[in-house]
Image (cartoon, rainbow, N blue to C red):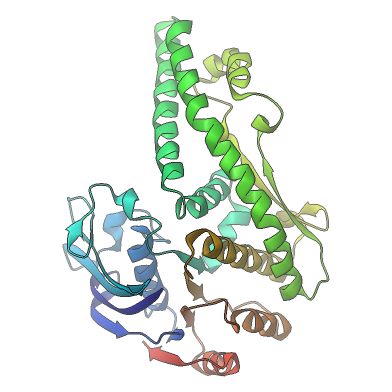
Length: 359
C-alpha cells in the first residue's frame, strides 16, 4: 500500500500544503514547532479518522480557520483509493472514500493500516492502564471490524450499568432483575473481547521479544503480560460477587475495562527499572511487533511513521533500528527529525529511494 500524495488545508499549522511522496522513504526535517509531526499526524488522521496527538477534533483546525481538509491519494491492491477527511467547527467529522461518505467513521478503520512510533508513546509506560488498553484495542480493531463494534457496545452497556448503580444509591433502592440484564449484556460483549485480547498478546509477545533482542543486542530480557481477572474467574461470577462493592462505589469495578498490559525488563516493571534508552527501545520493539502483526492480519504492508525516533538513542541502537527497516518487509516509511544532516545520513544507509521535505 502506498500514499502517493496528500493535500492539507487549515490542518493545524498548515494553511495550504501539498506533498508528493516517494514510494519508500519520506523525511520531514526542520526546527521544532515547524510542523514535522503535524504532517505525520495528518497521514495518521487519514488512516484512523482521528489525530494521534490531540483527540479533541476541533483543536486540529488552524486557529484562523473554521474547517480543515485532509485529502490523500493511495494505491492499494492494484486499486486507487481517494480519501478525504474534513471537519467544520460545530459539525461532525466527515470521511469520504472515493467520493462516498461513511455512515459510521468506525467503518473506515482498517482500510489503510498504519503504525506510528513517537515520543508520545512513552505514555504507554508512564500513564494508567487505560492507555495500554487503548493500544491493544487500536491494533486489533484495525484488522477486526467486529471487535470494534463489540467494544463500542460494551462501553455503552457499561455506562448504562454505572448510571443504574448511581440511581440505586441516590434513590436508596435496588433492582437485581434489571442489573442482571446489564450483567448478561456485559458478559456477551466482554468475554469475546477478553479472548481476542488474550490471543493478540500471545501472538505479539514472541515477535516483540525478537525485535527487542535485535535493538538491544540481546542484552536484556523483556516481557509482555495481559492482566485480567477474567483469567481466573468467569465474568458473570465476578460481577455477581462484586455487587456490594459496585453499589458502594457506584460504578462497575470489575471487567475488561479494568484490564492491563504489564511491561517488564529483567523481571521488573520497566516504568521503575528501565533507563530512558531501554524504555524507548522497548516501545520501538513493541511498535515494530505491532507492524508485523498487522501485516500478517491485513495481508498488506502498513505505512510506518517514525516521529523523532532517533532522539535519545545511542549510535548503536540507532544503527540496529536502521538495520530493522532496511529489508523487504517494510513498505513506505515517513520520518520526522530536527537534524537534516543526521536524517540524510540515516536514510542513505537504508539504501532505498527517498525524498526529504525541509519545512
